[in-house]
Image 1: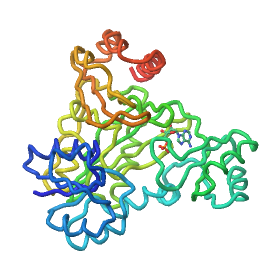
Image 2: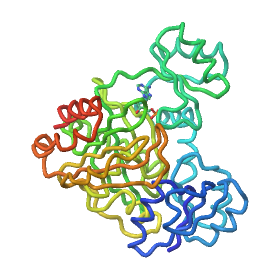
Image 3: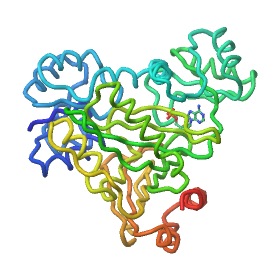
Image 4: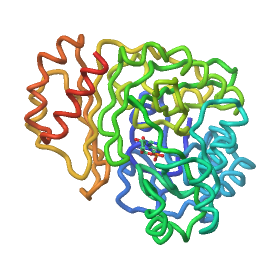
Length: 374
Ligand code: AMP
């Protein structure tokens, strides 16, 4: 099975690492000559919308992608010559925050109040509709909190317009959440669905810092989260892995966004579940039987942002290290570790081992997270 991936970042790398033992070969398209998955297959240094992509990928049995902002017209052309998974419909919905919210709303799923913004007067009308505080986001090309501005009072509107006014925008109410969580599911060609445990997530400055599974704080929401991801994955006739991110509020779950691909909140499944999200994505798109998605023990995923920590961290027993091989840069996800433990008691007892490698504020966030989840 020859699998083409648009993008050769860390998600493509982890898909290839999971797919190679299954006998898959990989072909990557990425304009960056030093893209981190490159050494795991055939790398073509091409822009994703370059017509030469068609000639390269038509020889693949399947084509998938590792990021949302793939040119969907290229995917439509690829779908004429090979099998593209997951569906372009899901990709297009996730590329535009307004389309995504409308889809969720049409399906009757809970979303924060939102409004379209395409002019300065509409910005005022939108915040009047959704209320203050509000988060103003670019409709396209936003990720990890990029292209977002918080508006607390009407006085903040001008600065927000100056910063983001050149783009098509969406205004959302600022959701007052107790915590955030995410659920990943995988569906195959025959419509079989497997769902991973609901994962507790902690973001700082819009970027995921920690993911923890299981979490007792999520227990009351598991059935609802499973029902939501099942409804979405079925209504999109989706094949592969899909993640739904939620805000947990006193009134219940609110969907933040969907990701039509493997996702950072489920990286812990590499060590913490029988079959990782990466392997299951490959199994689903290749039309092979899906693997088990149950978690075992307690998994804590720590994102490394900006730079990798000292390798002394490897002395921590049960810690699994993933260096993406990327050039360090502020705000860039360069790697992660998953700490696999037998129980929450063990996690609490051994937390000091990890604290030495985290900044003081991160230790505090982690302690708060464990208190909420344990
Ligand atoms: P996003 O890129 O939209 O997933 O946003 C990244 C993070 O910013 C989320 O995980 C939240 O922590 C925060 N955030 C985004 N939108 C909102 C919102 N409407 N209300 C509260 N927090 C938000």
